[in-house]
Amino acid sequence: MMSSMFKSFLSRDFDYSPLHRLLEIVAILSFFGLVVIISMRAFHGLSVLGWQTAAWLVPLTAALGYVGADFASGFVHWMGDTFGSEDTPILGERFVKPFRDHHTHPQGICEHDYVTVNGNNSIVLALYMIPIALFFTDPTQIWQLLVLACSVTFTCGVFMTNQFHKWAHMSDPPAYIRLLQRFNLILTPTNHDFHHTAPYDTYYCITCGWLNPILERLKFFETLESVARSTFGIKTVNDQPDAIRKQA
Image (cartoon, rainbow, N blue to C red; front, side, top):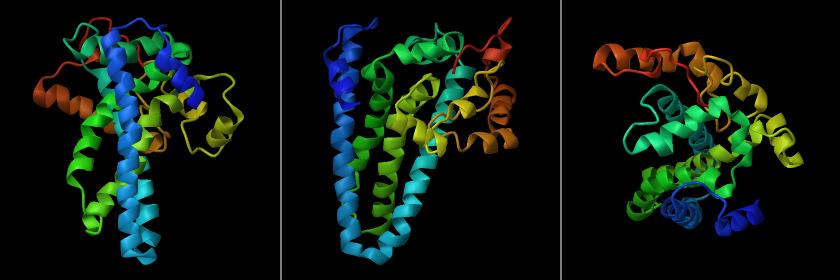
């Protein structure tokens, strides 16, 4: 995967703004730098506070961060599928359109290179990671350590979300990816297939998909959409004439 990343950095085979492409590359490189800083800071806090703290804090924050990434992926996915259109100012072209197009061309993601797949997530992550790196500087305080440790798995999960999504669409992913899918550690094709069944209004979480059956049983996103429509008067894709959800 590292070779494909560096190869994509030099590729000119993309069909969007070169400036945005450069921003994606910078954001990807920034992610790696920031996650190292945050991880080292968390490790320092754990070394100071001792193994008794690490014994409960590491598994707790690892689980919370990863599940948090799964929820974040589902919430953003739902937003892209539900609100706005491809003509929405600022967000339409780069946010809404890819989601909607993915429903009509689900295998298209398999043709995207590393930068295209992971760039936008990296840009968003920078808005979260920079404040964490700047202001959470004392990991010997337990609350700061909790935030730092949780941020490691959360940001790594979010960063890898579209990559997991891409692998779930591949007919023959690498063997180690199939193994991770078999143990449900990342998004599986079976889990994601529920979303790619019309009307594409369920199973939005695409990091590991663990939350999908829970949120579906709770009718979580259905309730949010109803509240947005009835309380705030916000129109959704289902309020448009002949609305057809196109995203993944």
